[in-house]
Amino acid sequence: DIQMTQSPSSVSASVGDRVTITCRASQDISTWLAWYQQKPGKAPKLLIYSASSLQSGVPSRFSGSGSGTDFTLTISSLQPEDSATYYCQQAKSFPTFGQGTRLEIK
Amino acid sequence: QVQLQESGPGLVKPSETLSLTCTVSGGSISSYYWSWIRQPPGKGLEYVGYIYYSGTTDYNPSLKSRVTISVDTSKNQFSLKLSSVTTADTAIYYCAKGGGGIAANYWGQGTLVTVSS
Image (tube, rainbow over all chains, first blue to last red; front, side, top):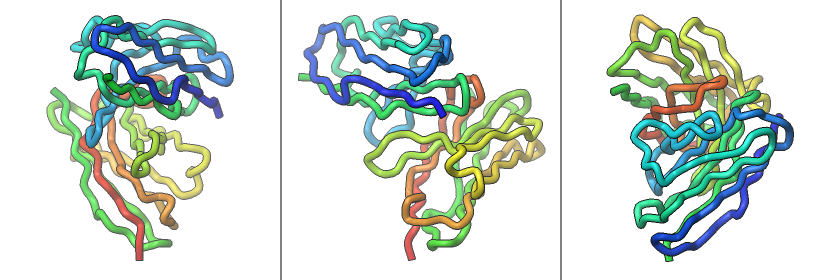
């Protein structure tokens, strides 16, 4: 199976900061990658699919990039409501998730 | 707006079978993939498996011998059965629209299933 590794495991940033989360696949997955946001007690929410396509209704401060094995989720200007855990997920073969990145607002 | 709702027992005994149903409203179950994803308390997400409306399935290799996902298009529902459960199967179980190469864009609220005697 394809292993997904996210970094960092946790990050703390201030409102207005630019935040970047990375995800690395154990083998080439082209652009078969999605990003999800999960807040405590809630189901995950799809942010990005196909590595860089913004899901309808998601704020434009979220963006995704990458292909092959290395991917990035960027929040251009951090807002208080962005405090959450973020997961990447590959869809090249049977789906697998990264371990998650917890984002805290300072 | 598609909505999904999980239903089933919240407590299952070890060695027994976990059974959950996901009811889809606001849209047809036809022509899409549908998934079960779980999350042990305080831990990350794990795909259990998914089904196409026609009945084609794919399962997590680590669970394959114990998992069955089925679909009932007449009821707009799909279901999960996980046999021979242990305490390691205790988790919040989510149903979602998506699977295969399609990202999960609609999710149920999740249901906590505890495996305990």
